[in-house]
Each structure stands twice: as C-alpha cells, then as structure tokens.
Length: 91
Length: 91
DNA sequence: TAGATATTTAGACAATCATCTAAATATCTA
DNA sequence: TAGATATTTAGATGATTGTCTAAATATCTA
Image (cartoon, rainbow over the protein chains, first blue to last red):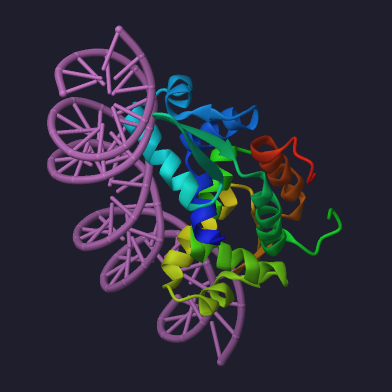
C-alpha cells in the first residue's frame, strides 16, 4: 500500500465517482463507463490507476471484467489520515 | 470544505510532509521550509494550497507567519472517506 | 471460423502542476 | 529612516496528467 499512489488515485473526481458507483456493488468496465462522462478508454485508464493503488479489485467474467471496491484497504487509508491529522481529540 | 481541493492538496508528497511537521506543533513558513527539500518560494506555494483546502490555518506574528494544522477538518475528511469506502463492516 | 462484443493499449495533445529564480511586499531593529 | 529579515508573488520551464481516437487483444456465439 503506497501512500502516494492512493492519494493520487483519490485526487481525480472521475476516479472518486467510479469508486462511489462501485460502493453500491460490483460493475463491469462497460457498466462503469456508462455512469461517467468520459470514453471507455479513459475509464479503463482510471480503473488501472485505482487498481495500482489497490483501491479496486478485478475479476474476469467471460469477455467482461468485473470491478469492485477493495474494502480491506479502508483501514490503511484511515491510518494514513491518522498519520496526517492524528493525535487530536476527535479521534 | 471542497472535496476536490482537499484530495488534491493531499496528493502531493511535499504537502503531506508539511502537514506531518505541523502535526507536532505550529511552525513558521521559514521553519517549515528548512524541513523540506524545496525553496521557500515553493513551500509558500504549497502552504497556500493547503490553506485553500482549509487544511491549515495561519496567523501573523510580526514578519513571520505561523502555520498550524486545522484539526477541525479531520471529521470532514473522514466523512469523505466514508463516502468513498463506507458501508462496510470495518467501520 | 467470422463477426460481434468487451476491454485495454498506444500515441497524441492540451491543460495543470511543482519547481525555480528574481522581484515585490511587509515588518523589525539599530 | 536604512538595511536586514521573513514571506509571498510573478513569470518561466519541464514534467505529469486526463482525455481523445484508433488500433490491438480477448472472448463469445451463430
């Protein structure tokens, strides 16, 4: 889990949109592409960045690829946040 | 609190480094500049981005400017994370 | 096997970004 | 007030990024 790749992945609004779609359930690359306003080539590119940051997982299903949020990473992201803002009374 | 400005602000390693320094206590722009490997002009630029994202606060002290982490923003950042990863058993 | 469908990869381009140096602004002090 | 100190602003530059179209790859089905 690389801090840099995670924060960079989250910095793009389209990628955050994709993550939010996936929160509700797994979707194929094509289904995801329909929910955002860029080409499927761009979506594919974004998905690969999310994958590299380990924020999403993918599995094959025929000619489709099914993406899902990697929820196990949440704790790591929370730890990063703590690393930046931690040690205050709100935690 | 703009999601976009916060995530973008956190995406840069130098800015995260500055936040970590400030976690331990308030510092002037010059003191911050000594702790990172860029010019004070660059640090000033980064600090303005952190300010715009409301992640740091600044107050004047003579010719110095004293920066500190805006800890109250942590809850908002946590909420953003929940918005992306939320609804899983780890929360 | 041919053609259709799903997705990724390659290559190009414009916009954004981090950084630098130099100059400007503001404040302190002798 | 002059000069020193602290910080920001302006302008330039090279690198990175998000996006597109076109082509490549992989899989399904008639």
